[in-house]
Structures are given as C-alpha cells and as structure tokens.
View 1: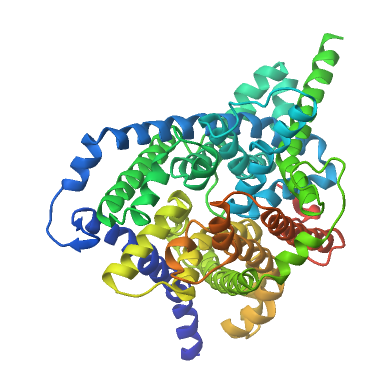
View 2 (view 1 turned 60 degrees about the vertical axis):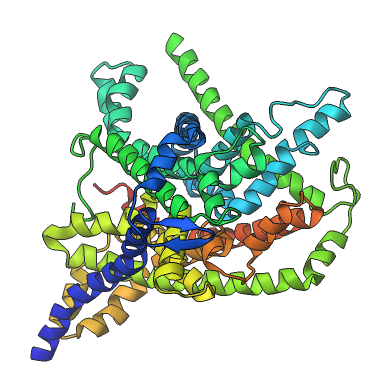
Length: 291
Length: 276
C-alpha cells in the first residue's frame, strides 16, 4: 500500500518534471546563453568576453539593420493579415460544406505545411521563378514575363503566404470546430441578420483562435530566412536572413546573438500586444481540459 | 427572395475561395511533380515522360546518405517529443492543479519562438558554452524542443475528452498505477500518440531552420537541397520534393483510411461530437 501511494504521488512530479527539465535545459538555457553572448563581442572570428553593449549600438545606428527590421515587421503584418483574411472563409467553408470529409479537407491543407520549408521554396520557384509556371504560360502565349513576381518583395510575400496559410487555416478551423454553431441560430431566431450574427456572435467567440493563428503566422514570418533569400532578390533582405548571415558567411556571432535578442523581444511584444486584446472568458475559453 | 440570393452568393464566394486556395497550394506542387517526371522539365506541357530524374536522384550517394540521416533525425526527434509530450499532457490534466497555467505557458512557449532562434540559441549554447561540435544528437534534441509543443497540442486535442473515471475504476479494483496506464490509458490514447509521432516525425525530417545550425557536417535531405538550391533549381530537386510530397500524402492517407474504417479515432469521435 505504501508503495502504491508512493507511485501515485511520484507520478505527478515525474510527468511534469521531466518535460519541464527538458525545456529548461534545451530551450530556456540556450536562449539565456544567447542573451549573454549578445553582450560580448567578436573579433576576427573569435569571441571576446568583455561586457559591452556595442552590438546593440551597432544595430541601432547601422541604418541597414533598422531598415531590415522595419521591412520584416511590415512584411509579417501584411502576410499575416492576408493569411487570416483568406483562412477565415476557407475554414468557414470547410465547416459549413465539408460534411463528413471535413477532416480530409483540413488534412489537405496540412500536406504542404508538412513537407518542409526548403521543398516548398523549391515548389515556389517552380511557380514564380523566371522559368516557372506563370512566366512559362505567359511566354507560351507570347506575352512578356511578369517582372514583379521574380526576385522582389512581392514574391517574398506570396511565398510567405504560401508557407504559413496552412497553419492559420488549421488553427481557425479548430476554433470554429469547437464553436457551438447553435449560438448563430439563436441569434437569428432573435432577429439578427446573418451579417450581424457573424460580427456579434461568430467573430468575437472565435477571436482567440484567430489571434493565435495570426501569431503563429506573424512570428515565423518575422524571422523568415529562406523565402526572402531565394525569392526576395537584391532589395528583399529581411531581418531573419541578415541574422542568419552573422552565423554563416560573416562569422560575427555576438552581433547575430544581439539580433536574435531583438527578434525575440519583438516577437514577445507582438504576442503580448495581441494577447492583451483578448478577454479569455468572453472568447469562450473554458480552461484546459477541465470543463 | 433577397435573403436567398444573398445566401447563394455567400455560398459560392466561400466555395470559390476554398477552391482557389487549394489551387494556390497545389499548383506549384503539381507543376514540379510533372516536371520531375518529364524530359522537358522547365515547361512540361505536354510532358514527355521519363523516370531518368528519379534514377539520378536515387543513384546519387549524397542523397542516399542524407536520406538516412534525415530518417534518424525524424525518428529520434519524433519519438522523444511524443513521449515527453504524452507525459506532459497527462501531467497537466491530472496533476498540475492550480499551476496548470504556469506549466502550459512553458510547454507551448516554443511555438511562439521562431525556429531559427531555437537553432541559433542551441548553436551558441552547444558550441560556445559546452564546446560541443554539432552532430545528429544535438540536432535531434533541438528539433525535439520545437516538435514537443506541436505534439503537446495534438495530444491535448485528443485527450480533451478523455474519461479519467476509467482510470479511477481500474485503481479502485486494485490495479497499480503502472498497470492502469498500460491496460487502460495507453490502449485508449494510442491514436493520439501515433498522430503526434507522425506529424513530429515529418516536421523534424523536413526541418532546416533548426537542424542547419546543429548538424555540423552531417548532411540531411533539407540541407543538401538547400545547398543545391543556391546553385539554381535543378530537376533533381523537383524530383526530391515530389518524392517527399508523395510520402507525406501517403502517411496522411493511411491516417485518414484508419479513421474512416474506425480502426483508430484520431480525436474524431462522431458519437460524442454533439454532446455538450
């Protein structure tokens, strides 16, 4: 009996403790070491351990980095807004007309998401590139190729929507799936027009899911490295891509770490700014599995 | 009358958006799929069929080694993150009590940190503070961090409606906690575990943004593809992407068939869907 008591008392700390330790050791501590490194400096590919804020001064005064960050913020905002705007009708259509094949429709969105960023960037090159499908069709018809989709910021934006639309659709779909559609009927019975029912019932009750979808698109877009590199062209350098270069060609790890800290703080601020707008109770959140 | 017209318009607008989105997602995939199977790879309309590209791809020893490494990476990170996420989900639901919010925040935090940051931070920690060279193990561990949160979410949606009274019943009749887990809990939650493993395996298999910084000199499929992409797109890359796409479609197809035939219920329990 004592052994069994011990076993059931040990289960909780063990089940929660092991994942917690795992995340502390492999997630929190590495992020902390990035913060430490950002206050050191790099000299001739060597890390020098003297504490200074030189990296941050470089980031704030070297105009290029500020430009990259602003460009990334604009890009991430545009891409996330477009993705949410497309994902809403898509998930709504799946919920309304999907019937018993709803899950298949949603899985069909997950297939491209799961094939990895590199392979999808390859596929995008097949669509947008100079020898890609769109320009191939145009040239086969005897028209001039479209310049604005080859190695421009527009191409990057199309690419990022392509990369992250699936996850936004999945999140909003899940939100709508857990939403009790009878509430709409109730609103309509009491005389609300479909439009009013949508904006006063459906939208606010799914706001939480929508914002999570927005955040899960915004954050990876903010730090995108692959899409701008292969689709963006000369004026398309984004912040994440510049950061990755510090760890590759230029070898300035300390500056890269500082860029990482700025990126991390920017994403946290964005998530908080989004999170502030949500009143969990009003969005129908009922807790985690305890009803 | 006006209402019916508005309704029909909404319906067609929604369905059109849906169709266009699928077209947008799948057009590139189908295009490079056709290109991979044809001699005129740049503009395969109409295609002149060939399997040469795949022959070159599968005969290339670089891609073969990279494929094996990716497989190890995917299985390692998938298994590790699924196991940890299963423990975390059970812990959260049964044992966290008032600290649920705290643990949940920590557990889903990796979702809100960009992959490339996880990669860079792990690189700094391993390379600078532990002075370890990158290899498959460090890549597996770092990928498992990112996959863990996804696995947790998948498991949580599966276990959301799990009836814990079944466990209590087994315990009341004298089963030990371990025996209860293996004879009651596990048989009921395995579809969730399998679903989480399949998804995290595919994610880690195809990951570049984390793996890139931690692999050292070990090639994986995405890193080899990335290296080749820098020198322009070649038909081999189309073939590679097509092969991976086919495998992913196959995996999700198996999941779907299992679900349709009722062999496994990946969180989809029609009889309980309407219950409030």
